[in-house]
Length: 254
Ligand SMILES: NC(=O)c1ccc[n+]([C@@H]2O[C@H](COP(=O)([O-])OP(=O)(O)OC[C@H]3O[C@@H](n4cnc5c(N)ncnc54)[C@H](O)[C@@H]3O)[C@@H](O)[C@H]2O)c1
Image (tube, rainbow, N blue to C red; front, side, top):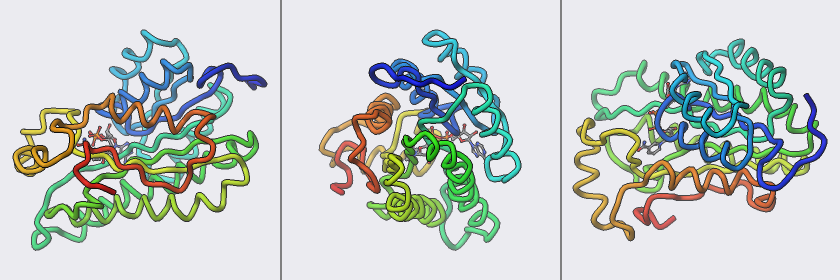
């Protein structure tokens, strides 16, 4: 189905949100649906809870399951979204893997897995959606990074390296796709209350040490990040590209 004209906000648009079975991704789906977008979810996990949550806002929601580090899987999912929903206007690349490990104990396997989940998936999904966005002369790509790239948080060398790679990707690609009306930006997210952060030993330390000196003395909530995602996804954000926007209560003053 081709939609020729668009109303206000994201009405008539289609947003693909990766890694949206849980956490921040679910909040992004709900927020973009509230702005009028049809929602496609791609995740290695079952996303039926996110589909149920978004269904109370729009019936134009679909989930596609698969490992986004595998080229054939990404091609299959992107083709299915285009077939089922007609186009892809917004890509929110939110797939991630969080793992604390002192560098001495970090194995080459852990290192490669982190880079693959964070960066191979970004390469593959962006590569697959760009031809559609170029044909439309419109696109918004938003990739989720982390404020640990500014803070240099320890025990996260593989994670911080991967999240820094996202910023390099955004900066360079922005220059190649701007002429097609496509923007690409990263959001560097602070510790977000997507799940009980006290489950993670490193996060216990972060809560104790990092939140008090922040400018805003609370952890990010998923809706804080979702508001920025929605802003960057809007047609009106057409002049903002190649940026890494920091959303962490002022922990890093990037
Ligand atoms: N939660 C935080 O405190 C925080 C802080 C900084 C940055 N971030 C980033 O924000 C994003 C979302 O965070 P979150 O805590 O909601 O994420 P999360 O780690 O809980 O979930 C990520 C999602 O990615 C999916 N996924 C993982 N590997 C995949 C693969 N190979 N193919 C397809 N899907 C895959 C998972 O199933 C999951 O649904 C991530 O990129 C994360 O790194 C989160």
